[in-house]
Image 1 (cartoon, protein in one colour):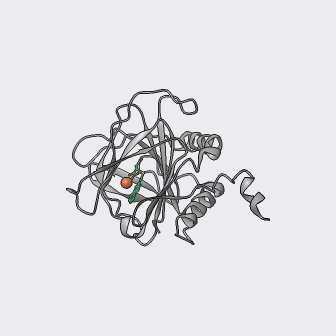
Image 2 (cartoon, helix red, strand yellow):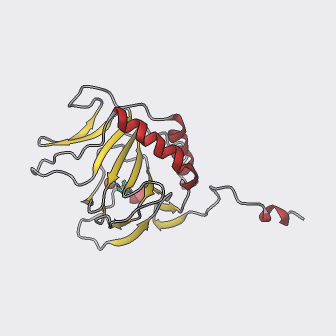
Image 3 (cartoon, helix red, strand yellow):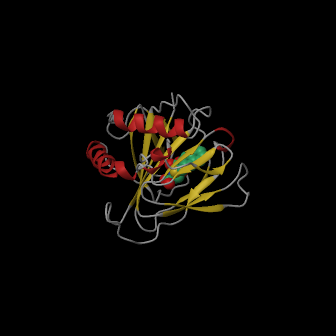
Length: 217
Ligand code: MD3
Ligand code: FE
């Protein structure tokens, strides 16, 4: 009798989460329908707060360019890295997080089993071919909250490790529109991104964006 319900087009969020590890799951393509809006939002934010390749304490410079919106942004320079409420170079606060972005992250987290997640910061990473992110843990935010990541543009190989730096890495492709939620036992796993392969994406051109929604305060 109710069979017909299953013949309707599923809503875009009906994909079943693909479990990566305890506490971590991928919602494949979940943000694809929001790409045009979110990429326009990234461009607005970048006009107010340009993408920058930050210096690192080791004397190098990151290959990934970063900006942010919300209550703070992640900052790195020769003195170390930390969250800051204002751009240390201009003294300006970060642009506000769009309400629709915050609501999107809240809903993605809820679908992954983390009800009540309200992010206060969204970090925005910009990758050009060759850019990579070395193996690291994210431990400068609240560890009782998950992180929601949204990828747009060129595909990347995400490296998923364990709780020790030397644990073996799994390679997980992340493509345009993929959303990943990490929390609980997976919140402190070591992870990174392999060097981006050259390409030209129909929506973003020769680049990849990754947004990570976090709770810092
Ligand atoms: C797992 N970004 O910004 S998103 C980062 O694609 C970062 O730009 C990558 O790692 C990127 O810190 C990967 C996936 C991600 C983000 C945060 C995590 C995975 C995580 C925090 C804890 C565990
Ligand atoms: Fe990270």
